[in-house]
Image (cartoon, rainbow, N blue to C red):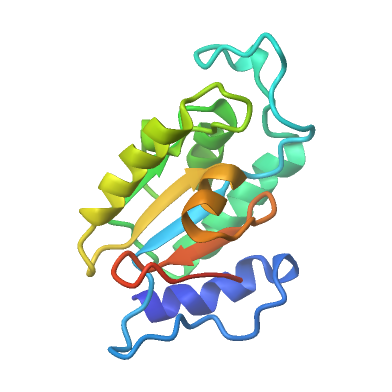
Length: 178
């Protein structure tokens, strides 16, 4: 299943990466068990000064192009029969909306995926929650995490574009963007 997932990702967002080899080099030939997906297109930078996590009108949200981008990514995943063991989303509206428009399964909010970019979430608490979660994901699971560039970068060292994803292996801590 993970092998098929790696192949379809190249088809989903071919313009978001220059990577030619989607495999994460591993001696035991197992692949990533986490997919970090940066929320779809949400024009702007950061969040407004009046940001309130529970009020989407105070946040930077998905554009129409962002909603379509999320729908397209989800459509490709469904067409390939990709099934996630768990789907988690940041509590920010643009991430939750991305997860909703993917339509790849039931998802839930997870505080360990929240953005600490402007101090709206505590960075150390966020990273600690996420690191603990990652350490408990079984190798044979495939977990989708819809989050923000700063969170993905903190864990993987990779900064994907909006709608871009990073494959991550919790055992080796290797990551690769496509």
